[in-house]
Every structure is written in structure tokens, then in C-alpha cells.
Image (cartoon, rainbow, N blue to C red):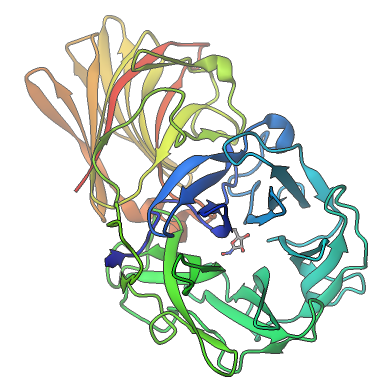
Length: 496
Ligand code: 6LW
């Protein structure tokens, strides 16, 4: 059956995957968003359903007032002897830690810290030993992929951190994962940085601590030489076997907004590329070493589901909600298909936790609508990349009328594109029409659609905003004079 990359769309970077009890589980990075580390389940590596998050408690992750794109970096998920382990870095506090659970649908443990630096920690388990690797430098200061043995019950180091591979020469050697197959240890990594030069490389050896011999034709997977192809930045992956025992790399990549656009705003997404092991024990990946848009998946029995039009489940049970840093939960109420938000004087421009609850934008072309009412201050929808890059369409109470505002924030330019008074204090329907190049903002009143203006997607892109995240569509409320009350209903995403 044919499928289309990306297999998981929207800002879900740094995928790591494991197999347990007949199913696949995948974890992604989440940075300053809460809950942390979205967790997915699949039967076939193609159709993924979010089942929760690994970091759901404040005690598990420090996010208070951290910078955007700080916090939770790339995770690794592994299953060993009936227990799931997820390790990641809080890049803001420079700490590597892991959490565990025996119930993948339940809560995860409190963090257990490992005294090894660098980012992108990973585990390899063998004969009751746990090898813990990350990028960084060893105890002698030698840079590369570093590894130690740890006591998995305490996180205590059982050996020194030793540099085991220095990569193939690309910058930003990261994302190490170790596997054993056919008598060899394979150490897979990413190099080139998470932008246009990204790539997957690997080495193999006969012992978990090496020595490792790099694959002669590294990188084994990259789209860095495919100018004019919309899928770019492929790298940072995890190797996995499908139900028919074929090998695949699940990895990140991004979609440019057009063939030669060099902008992407939906963040890094999840892609799949085939792997073939050859007789000499080395493997090749992708189609001639590149990740294509369309792939034939011989074992697949259930067609791929792509993002479809949905009325967003506006209840607290929706696992896709994300908050900025640690939310003040008393400002969020879910009841009978209505979300009530209490805005504060923390605004979307602050490196803090404004009253904001969002869902990732998963495809370029979308119509997003929501009904909003507010008693004072401001409430609306935001197309949010970070505190300096967001487009807001909101209503504001002006005596006994609403004023509708379109605000475009790009860097330190904070511009009110349009305001207009509308003749109601009832619920207002806000609308965003997204294409690959622009967002068009309008308001629907009972008898009219009022066009407010537009904002280009490129100014919300990673190339302009920087950082590691992608666009999230948020419902928000703010009130510079105190605490307001806003209600949201009929939040819809229609993908075309
Ligand atoms: C992540 C690193 C990377 O930890 O970007 O693409 C960093 N790779 O491996 C943040 O996602």
C-alpha cells in the first residue's frame, strides 16, 4: 500500500520508537510546552494515535519561565523486561534524566538524573546492563558520542563516560542510538544540524564501547542535496523492525512551504524511510539515501489516515492540548463543549505562561474557526510560533460593543493590522484560512464576513523565528487590568 510522508504531521520532532507487546510506541520532544513528550501508539508504524505524554506533572520537569525552545529536547523510548523507559534532556537546566512506567497508559515516575552531560540521551540494554549514551564530551574532554554504564534503578554511573564515536565529520553530532543485530553493534546518529544539512550516519563495532568503524558511504540518509524538493532536513532517527521484520528508520524532517521556498513553519515532523541490510552487514536507507514523499509499504493492511477535518474535542480529555510552560490550571475550565479561560496580565509576548491552550497545525491548507465571547480584556485565536512571532485575531470589549483586532507580531514589530467595531456582544465567530504562504483572518457575524487582513507564513517560520518548534493554533485570553473570562466553543480544523 502506498503512503505519504510525513507519517505524523505538525510539530513532533526527534521521534524515538520502541516495540512492546505487539505494538509500537513513539515519543517526541516538546521543549517549553506542557505536558511534555507526546506519546503515540501504532500497530504498523504508519498510523499513530496519541495515547498521552510522558511528563504530565510539574515535579517531573522544570519549565517555569524558561526560554522558548529550551526545556525538553530529544527523547529516547525503550522497553526492557516489562518496563518502559524514556530519557531526555532539560536543555535549560542542562540535565539528562529518565522516567519509567510499567503501564504505558498510566503515569511515569519522577525523574532520575544521570550525571552525564550533552543532549539526546539514549539507552541500550543488554544482559541487565544499561548503557547510557549522549552527545557531548567524555571525562577527559574528548568530544563525540559518550557512553557510560548506569544502574537503571538509581541512575548511578557504573563506569566513566567514554567517547565511543566522533562521527563522520559533520557538525553537531547528536541523536545516538545503539542496536545489536547479527552479532554487530550499530551506533546510529545525526550530523549536520537540524536544518538543511541534516543527515543520518552510523558506525558498527563488536562491543558496546567500540571501537566503531564508520559506514564508508555516510551519510546513509539525507535530503541535503535535493534542491527544490519540499522535504528537507531529514535526520535524527531511530531504527525499528516492522511487523514483517523489514527495517525502517523513523526520523524527523520538515516540509518547505513550496519547492524553492526555504521556509517551513509547521515544525519538524515524523517521516519514515526504508532500510536494507546487505550481505556484508552494512545497511543503506531511503531511496538512494534520500527520503521520498511517497513510499510503498508492502506489509501495510490498513490505509494511512492523514489529518482530517475535525471539530476539536474541546474537553480536558483531548490529549493534543498544549500549554505554554506550566499552566495556572485554575484559569482553564472545560465544561459541556465550552472552554472557559481566565486571562491575566501575562500576554502572548511574555516568556511565561499566558492563558493559552493550543493544538498543532498539521497541514498547510486549513480552515480554522472558533466562537468566542469575553466579558472584558481580550480573547481570541493565535497562530503561534513563539512570543515574538505570532498572529492574533481577537475580540475586545469596548463599552457595550466588541472590537475585533488583527495583530501581527514579527520580531520586535508589533503591529495592529486592523480593528473594527462589530455590532454585537454575543458570541463572535473568528476564522483563519491557512495556505502554504499566508493566513487570512476574518470574522463572521450573523449576516456578513468581515475580512481583516493577512499574515505571511514565512514570518512564523523556523528560518525567521529560530528555535525548534512549529506553529500551534491557540485559544487565548489576556487582560492587562486583571482577570477576564472568555468562552470558546465550536473549535474546528478543516484540512483540505
Ligand atoms: C535535538 C537534536 C536535534 O535534541 O535538535 O535534530 C535538537 N536534532 O538532536 C532539538 O530538537
